Length: 126
Image (cartoon, rainbow, N blue to C red; front, side):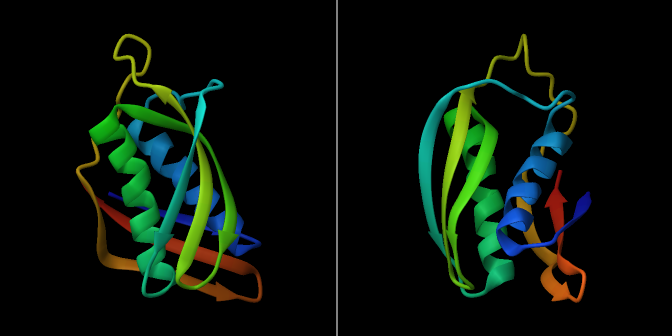
């Protein structure tokens, strides 16, 4: 399964990609005020950075049982991302899973720009 995301700016693209992935995973997008986690990542380019970013959001859910209910990209360059992620604890009685994503893949993944803004394509392993 994959997703296409677009935004007028690069920070918005990374924020929208995280939200779109959560929409794929959950039947109803999780919401709520939770605690904030600071995330810092490095990558070799924008596409690698996006894969690592989404992988970190996925790890929070799979490894820590925390659901990202909001993200704010604070700093972003072609090789570095710093963000604040708002998370709530996963509750299987409240949060219904639609699709279980096993991994964010590099297969056909791409971050690009044109005169209209930024686009990203990401493929997931289900």
